[in-house]
Length: 189
Image (cartoon, rainbow, N blue to C red; front, side, top):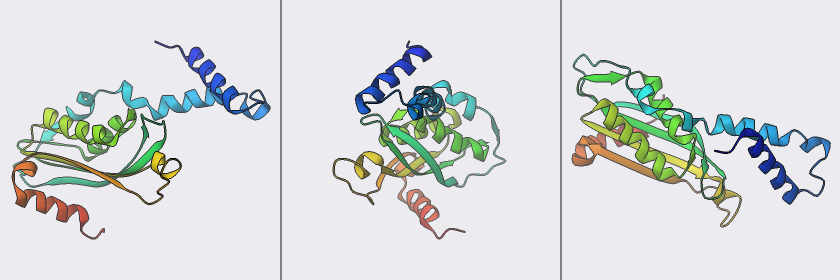
């Protein structure tokens, strides 16, 4: 495992690749600031989904769709180390247990705060819901804009990538999937 000091040295070396005067005043503390920001941005590596989703409550017979939509997130593309951000819609149909609403956004953040691709975040969140909640159905839809598409390569400013993962009733039953889509894409409050 690389130490914090070795990581700061690596950032310093990268700065010398970009900037002839990489030891000027404005860059002196940049390696430390970069590593400090990475500790926060990539904090998902230090979290365990069970710590988030294992605290459940009695569902009191509720068997409808539970949806938290428009969960904003920020992540980093593992291919170019460019940021991507967007919104996630997370839904499940409980059997016996429900989870606190903040837990749905926290599980998105756990996956987003790692070097990622959008497909892996989508699959990871839905798989965690199935594993820890054992719902009748689970679904995750993510819409995001990617820095690697916006500022390099094809330079498409308004492109939005959408990924989805459906399990259980959302995968097997068209009417459940249709109701979910209506809830997600209905007019906001």
